[in-house]
Length: 91
Image 1: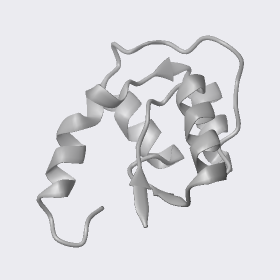
Image 2 (image 1 turned 30 degrees about the vertical axis):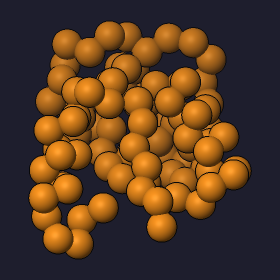
Image 3 (image 1 turned 90 degrees about the vertical axis):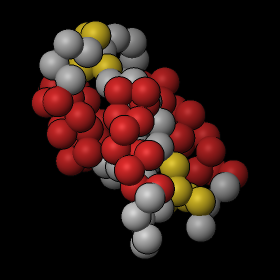
């Protein structure tokens, strides 16, 4: 099974939704709770703009983005993702 992570913004949710229609995947640190944690660690992130999008794998993710209102790029959490790769059973 593919594990997927993307940007926490509306474009990132659209890309992930499109991919999910064609390739089954599981979220990899790409849920509402992951977003809230990332946004808290990166308060200098830019404001979220654009038209909202759904997240079929976690409907709460859309609500979290609307509530917090920050764009968190994948590169901001890359240390966590790389750390997961070094842990058996994570990914």
